[in-house]
Structure formats: structure tokens, C-alpha cells
Image 1: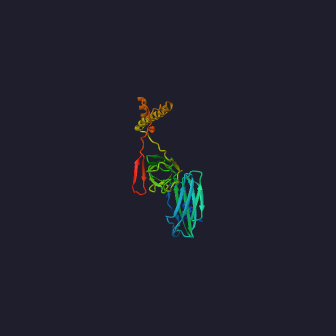
Image 2: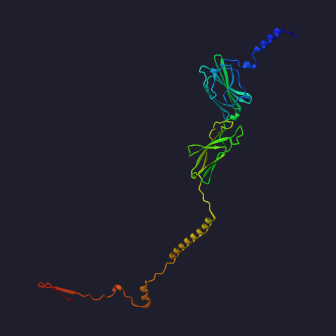
Image 3: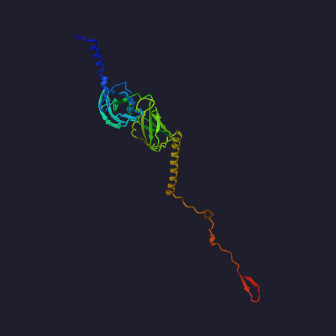
Amino acid sequence: MLLLSPEMYDLLLRARSQSPTVNDRKQRPQAGGLEATVACGDDEANLQQLSLLNTSGNTSLLHIDPKSDVICLLYPTHEVNCSWSLESLEMKANVTTTISICNGDKTMQTQESKISTGSHSSLIEKTITELILHFNISLHDQWAVYYYKIDNESLVLPPPPDVKGSFKDNDLFITWGLPFCQIDCSNGILEYELHISDQEKPKYVMALQSYTEPNVDLTQSYTVTIRTRVSEYYAGSHHWSDWSHPVTIEAKQLTYQLTAEMIIAISVGIPMILLALLLVVCQRLSKRLFPPIPSPPPRYLHVLQNGDHFVSPDLAVKPDEEITLVFYSENEKTHKSRPI
């Protein structure tokens, strides 16, 4: 057994206390940033919030406004879109942005960028459970590490499925199904926007899966598209989904429903009309087949029935006409006349 003097033991403890630990080595500044990171599967990290992970102490020149624009979107198609713009940051500061795409506790892909304002987009074959952005910032002898994390509960929702429409009375009735969610979307946390073809502004619907547009033109066709998102009062993606595929509700063919009165009227009216037409046709046909025998006028019929001689009124002898001669004398202003 090795025996140490008290002086040697104190010296050994002092040297051990000055040697860097694992955490100290992670916080050692390097060119372009630090090794301190948030690992995939770390449940204690903040979500959807730009947070400070570690610093060298005095970082007044490296302060980042928490309202800086950092947006990361995960889509059901395994697509990743991120953009960032770090406000209130010293212009001369060195920034290294690292994007880690996780599947469970494994890192599938890492992307680095040397700019304070940028964007990233990629398509991953496997399911994405988390996405973590690290901002390693250094200036002179100061350094700081910020991070921004989202998980698959922040997945941008797909458009609502099973969009259907029909006419009810004079209204347009539209229904749709729940989109696929990583969280429970059946408790009314979703809000929707409906765009109907003949209207400029979309209709807003909250926590329902149907909508009724009153007093529509039944002879016109309508095209409907819908998008959705989680309400801002609940945890989840507050980014609107893509619009659904257009669904066309065809114009309604107007049909008339026969009532009992209409059926009786048709049953009685049609035979009566046919009977009247038949009588008219038979009457005309009988006149053509059996024309009537002509009869003399009544005055001729009277002569024929009584055996009298027929005297034509045109041949009757007229009485003699009286002719008067008028004589004028040259010396008389009067005249004389005498009948012949």
C-alpha cells in the first residue's frame, strides 16, 4: 500500500479539482462554437422555444432576442423546412447553426451553416420524431449556445380527408373527416378554413366537422377545399395544413314529387282529354264517310210540299210606269205638262 504524506494528498486533490470533467470538456470553446448540445430523446428540453443552453459567463454581446424568428415545420411526408433569423446579435459574432434530425434517440442527419440568417429544407426517408437546432455563437473570449427543439407532436397536419357535399333544401351541406394526428384531435382542438368557389373569403369553423352554407343557388355547381390546424390554445402545430383536393358538388337536377292530388288529377284528366279528342276525330270522320243530303231552303220546301206553282220574284210583272211630258213656250214663263 502506498502511503502519502498530508502535503502530497492535498496537492493531489488540488490537481484533481483543476482537471476538466466531462461536462467541462463539453463546454470548452472551440473554433466556431461549443460542443454542448441537446441530445435526441432529451425529454427535459424546452419545445418550440429559443432557449439558452450554456454560456461562458459574460455574454452581453451574444444576447439573442427570444422573439427571434425561428420556424421549423415537420410534414407528414417526412419533409423538413426550417428558417431562422437571429435578432439583436453582434454583427461580428461567429455563428454556427447545426440542425439535427432525430428518429427516437438516434441522429439521422446533421446539417451545419455558418450564417445567422438562413433556411434549410430536406426530405427524410424515415419517420422524424424530433428536430433540434443549435446556435453556437462566439465573439472574442465569449461564447454561448442556444437551441430550438420541436417534436412530432408539432407535425403539420395533413388536409382533412373525406370531404363531401350535398344540397339539403336550399342549403349546401359540407362534411369532412379528422386528419391524421400525433396527438388526440377528437376533442375539438382543431380549427378549419373552407373555401367555396363563389366566395372570396374562406369560412372559419372551430371544433366541428360540418358546415352549412344557407340559401345557395341549386342550379350552380360548387367547388370546396379545406385546410386545418391546431388551435392556438392547445399544444401542437399552429401552422395551416395544405389545402385539400378540390371537391365539386354538382348542380342539383330539379325534380318534382307527385302528391296524391296530382296523381288523382292525372288519372282522371288524361282519360277525359283522350275521350274528347276521340269524339272530335269520330265526328269529323263520320262527316267524311256519310256526308249529309242537301235540302232546299224553307220557302222552296213550302212550295214543293203544297204543290203551288213556283214564281220567281225576279220574274214578277211590274206595274206600268207613268210618263209625263213637259212642254215649254217661249213667251211663257210657265210650262204645261200632261200625262201620257
